[in-house]
Length: 231
Image 1 (cartoon, rainbow, N blue to C red):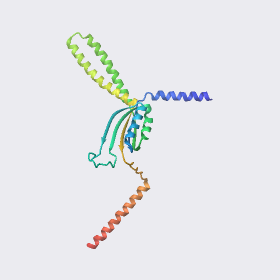
Image 2 (cartoon, helix red, strand yellow):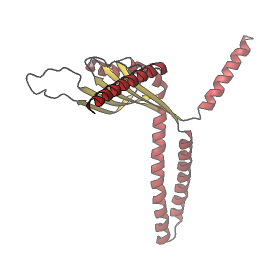
Image 3 (cartoon, one colour):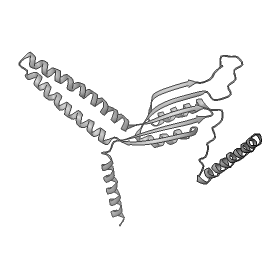
Image 4 (tube, rainbow, N blue to C red):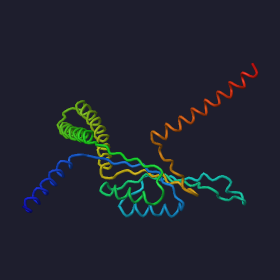
């Protein structure tokens, strides 16, 4: 009956939610966009970043214009390029990427998903082990009866704390990568959009190859005829 169906759906929902909650997944997107109205597109991207609770991790803007200092200079092509690395909460990753894809003409876009569960768990285990070592060494430090023992324990404690700091930093980085997806955006100003060259199918490539072969063969015959005349 209907109640049983609802129960089954809820069971599977919570089952898969429970299973996947133990996975640590990172999302990365690289997207190149052309824009006819560069400043307006910049503003739209910033609005999307704010809307989805993200932030700009790095930002580079450069202008390839030459001769702008001459009074006769007239801009005839797009010269501005902006390279952005944006971090967006992973829950809003798809919505943000879809939004950015609509602000201009996408020239290319690649997306990747990485499962870092093994690396995360290994690093977390190492951090716990080092914290336990640190605690024991601090207890040993208080129990030292000689300066030599204290120096030995202090040296080892320093080594453990340095390792702990390194692994904890890596663990924090993993947490940030899981919580915030990475989107690398290249925004390019253009006067007109670059036409997309459609990929040829097998028969089109075969046709082009045969036409080229025939042309090359014709050139060879022509060369042979001229050569025979002068020999």
